[in-house]
Image (cartoon, rainbow, N blue to C red; front, side, top):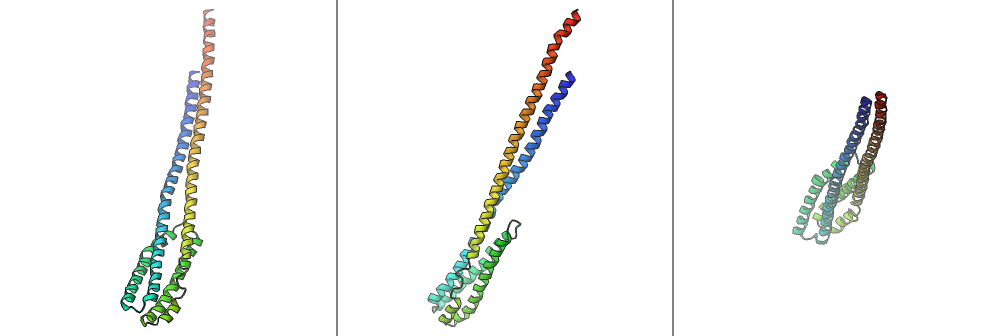
Length: 229
């Protein structure tokens, strides 16, 4: 009897320990994944938004240069100052912000649609630069009307694919955050179920052992009475 109770006791509480360890390990794994996802999401979104904002801000400055030349193109000092600003903004856009965004777009979580939006921006940007290269020597020759005709309407809608790209990246970020939240809920649910299972096993084991002990105690006086006879 003693050995049977000891065996049942070890088995019951051993199962409780194993269930809690397995559930705890899986829950910890899920929580670590959720933490990593939540940590990476803001950084990913911040870098993408920062890069897109940098591209748009520098392109807007380039566009304003063409407008300033249109308004004050006959002033040679102003003309060359604006050209210097244009080249500086163009260099920052192409050497800093565009490579930064392209590294993000090379990631595994980026869709083909998002890459297409960026390709649309690059195509519109290239068309703007081509028109500028054609108009620049005309501006330098002070033939403003001809140069203005070349640049007319150029750059107006270049940034639109970029705006849509940022919106799409933010939508992906929200989905990733929702998945991370779901993992957290799953981990909490598993721990709760494991706790309930462990409590049930502990109660059943205790009930079984208590019944065995009660049976053993009830049988002890009978043995003694039989011995006295």
